[in-house]
Length: 164
Image 1: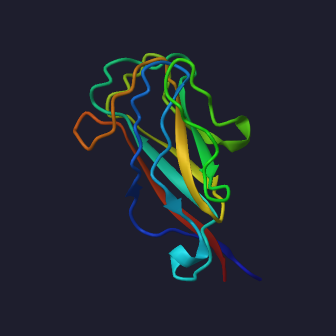
Image 2: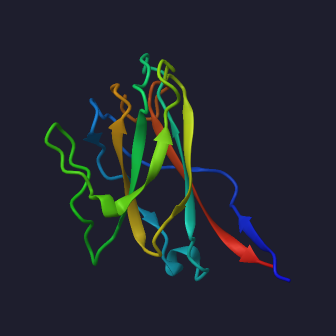
Image 3: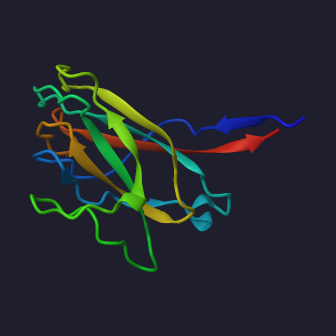
């Protein structure tokens, strides 16, 4: 009888993404590109899933609203361009519900988000190059990702299933 096992590479990679989402329902810009094509993986099979980890910056001194979260969208490369997504601002156009991949839950109401680490795991990813977009539904302003101690940071790790 075959056994199915999940296999993860060690460590997480940091995405370059501007998480300065200044109000609820504001989208981030597109992240840096993740190359999940065979050629990028030295001819190995592409990855099926990714785990994402969001760490809130320590300048967020407010608590999430009831049911607050940060939404995650996976945007695949279509031909040579990415679909319009992730325009920031009050009139931002979201990436569309077909790209929705999951949520980073932000705890119960009254939980201070400073330094909170939350995850979105086993997200199906395309066998293509792709980027991610986040939407702020926490009810509080998020600080800019920039490698400082006050930055909110998004990391990822791709993984597969193996049969033995």
